[in-house]
Image 1 (cartoon, rainbow, N blue to C red):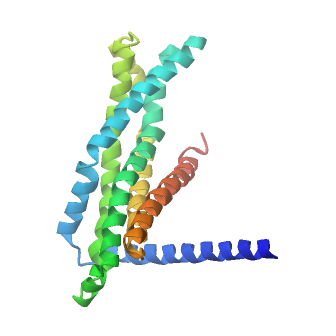
Image 2: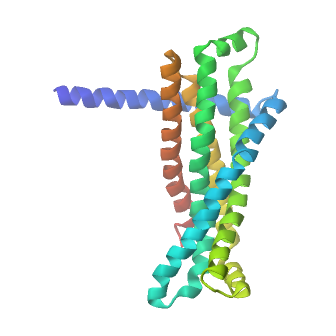
Image 3: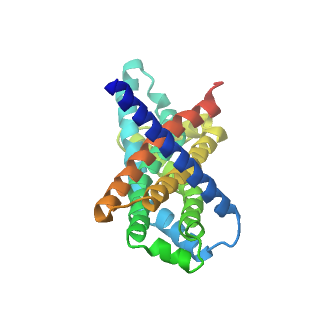
Length: 258
């Protein structure tokens, strides 16, 4: 009976957390589409998410494309299929590695920062102060971050796709002695618009998820500095897990018939 009771408690806690997250998401979405909009806050969050995350996302994409080209060559050379390296690099980066790695890097950088900032405001009662000043915390704190994450991560991933494919090109041409024009032609020959579009759709969903988890855990943090630290950790972990889950779901929607 003790095991059944523990299982039931865990299940009830999971349902409670799911319900709180669903309500939080619904309220946040409502304030994302309902005026007034704090354009200065939205612009600030766009700069934080997009501009300041570009170096780490760009470096990740560059070395991912370079390593992918090397690994593909070592494997395909066993079957005399070296000509497929350009195609594999382009499809892997645009479909999967660009949005997933970009989302994970942004989750580690931005998701933690959002949870820490909002969590600190919660434990120091600054969010309560906003309410007393007739400023809705969802509209001032949550909605700008959700809108910024939804719009900026696809732009980051688009840049990461270009940098990642360029990294594969550098290794293919200057390390593996491929012909530059042939490499570029092979890349364009098999790369379709749906490959890039699916990656950008994933990036938009991942950006929303990262911002949502950061805001949710920060908003519900409690217990002083220890609670803020726990909220930061939970935001990064939950965002990373949801990115992988949504990656599978969106891939199934786009490529289930292929």
